[in-house]
Image (cartoon, rainbow, N blue to C red; front, side, top):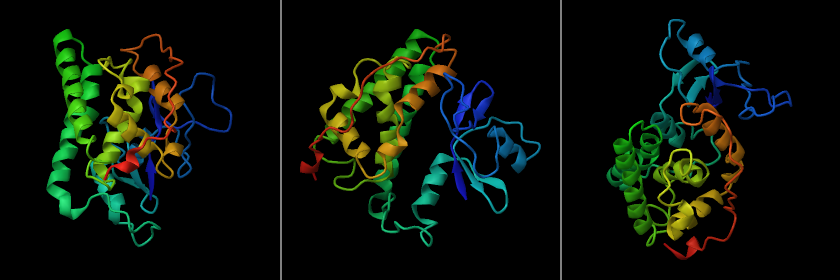
Length: 252
């Protein structure tokens, strides 16, 4: 099985050839090494020739049956946590610990509603009042999480769980995209000492920095949301350095 998470352009989620044939200004390179598809919609059509709904990511593709078996991020994260342990090299990792399951689920829901999805409610608002409500809700949540992380290295003390990576995905994009593009600009993550240190701590975990490309992130948002950014101009900044010492190891 392979996970597919390509980029998106005017024609939908698209795979691009990373061999140097990418036109200047294209969002970034990603190629389908499994089927040679050019568009993710081809995977949906291969799974169901009558599919006429919205094409979404991520996708878990089964190479044996040649079909999509899941396109729900929450489901896929749970699957990858343990169902492939017989084949994995990191069976000792558990991002959904049973001993904190109820509290973990509650915090994950809070993050989704107020942070992960909150920035989108603010960014895609078309009226002032809904925008202000959504934006303030994002920063109220960030204030609460800043306090939580002042006493704990990660969201559940000294261990990293799924909720940390759920939060990371929004934090790492916040100053580069959500602050400007989505108008979530009351503060930057850089202005929160604990959130910024926590972000750098997660970013510096083995293998994580290799998954983050700020140029790709900015091109995706600024070039595909033409209703927000009709000129498709991608800003040069901000200049971010997540490799500095964070000091979070002092916390439990």
